[in-house]
Image (tube, rainbow, N blue to C red):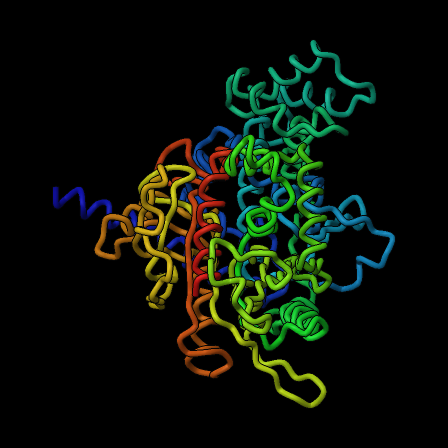
Amino acid sequence: MSILKLQGRTRAQESSGAIERMYITMRHLFNRGFYKPMGISGETLRESLLTLRPEIYGSVSDDKAELEGLLYVVDRLPRGIEECRYINLTSDEGYGNSHFKPIIPPKRRRNCYRIDEEQMNIEITRGRSEIYDILTHLTFLFIESEKIMKRVLIDEEGNLTRDWQKLEAAVTQKEELSQAEREVALTHTASILGRTFHEIRTIYSKFSTPENQDRFLGIIWSLGKMAIREAFKNEKRIITFSPVLRERLGHHIHGEIWANDIKLKLIENGLMGRPIHIISANMHSVMNTLYTPYALKAELKKKGALGIYEELSDSGNGVLRQKITKVALDNGMMFLEDKSGTNIDVQIFDTAALEDGFKSPEFRNLKTEDKPVLIVMDYAFGEQAYETMDELLKPFSNEDKEIKLNVESISIMGKAGILEGGKGDIMIPDAHLFEGTADNYPFENELKKSDLDGQDIQVVDGAMITVLGTSLQNKDILRFFHDSTWNVCGLEMEGAHYHKAIQAASRLRGSIKENVKVRYAYYASDNPLETGSTLASGGLGTSGVKPTYLITEKILEQIFNS
């Protein structure tokens, strides 16, 4: 037993070392300004990723292609990036005011611009975590492209297999493929990727778009083509970091603009002196919870709250959503669409405009100046959480006066990976441990596990790891944290960053009350310790509705009864 534990610990340490090497290397390459991902400069990233074997990238270290991991990555990178030899990471440098049309990845809110046939620019406005995220995904993509090249080469002269020639003919023909031609092409693709025809046909449709049904074939061909050209025509792929990005990174430029817009809106509406409660959540659960009783009385009586929330989560149900949004905007809600580049929209709720509080019998007796103001901010991304919360909690200079926000509480609700349980379960943390450092942030959480008991949903508590990137986690590290005395119940990307900002503002700078109440709660989007339950296995679907609204209700109950 002790030998098995020692072996497990050794593997965890090896994986932890691989993560550390990746981040040190990425910082070095960023400071250098450029690198060739398939050259010596990119070798450390490739080797570290293959050593780590993250769960989200599945079989990246095998000879066969990793299909679910590829789908996960291309959903988070701009369409067409597999065709580009030059990838340039930039700051917000004015491309939004040009003829270039922004390309926004389906699962990551960032502006990307196809400059020409060979170059893709990716705009970085959310800090280092965004750079790490992109470089990790690109490293995976380059590893997969190298696999394809090796499987289609016959000899060292660069002669290619019949499978490759048939795939190339299918991708480059001008006419749309017939079903028979498509299945022939998929057969050859299966051979190239080392997968079965069934596996290829199953994944194929997940890559399809309305404009391009055969996108999967094009991606595989482009990845292979770029690797072949690099190997035999010396057309090296290069990743660069613009001088402006390197100069601006870490200076909170976007976060300061974002926070000032919020504070000006509070002043404009006479809300700055009121009790303020900040909530980091999505842009629907607080609004729906507060206004469904007003906007959908008949539907609520017929279907119940959970039934209504499940209907509202359906993207095709726009009529109900619009109805609630209109009632909200007419009764105290203000919406601030982000214009700062943070990609974080904001809702401000003046609860004095509500007829009643949220399950609070004392609400009607409160004076207007004592009724809470809610600031709901959309999810931040990794280190961006520190930038935005730090700027939001700072005093605001207006007309030669320094104004401090009257912050009563800060609540963080989000998705996270769970280490004991499944999708839709809830985690209530009592500390955040910052991966790769000795930093830990214990706190008194106003939300307790007992607050959610009896709701027919599993709730766990313990510490949470704030990871450097969800795409770098593997079972060995996570199992070590779960089984050790750290008592870790889950992993996420923002908690330690939020708490670092809160702690600095409350205890060091005195910008807000020292006894500000904090609430953290997460619902499980995946379990990386279970095969088939990682983020690459798909979304939550309706299983995320109940925990989302249950947490939202408990946060609002505590705010209105504080």
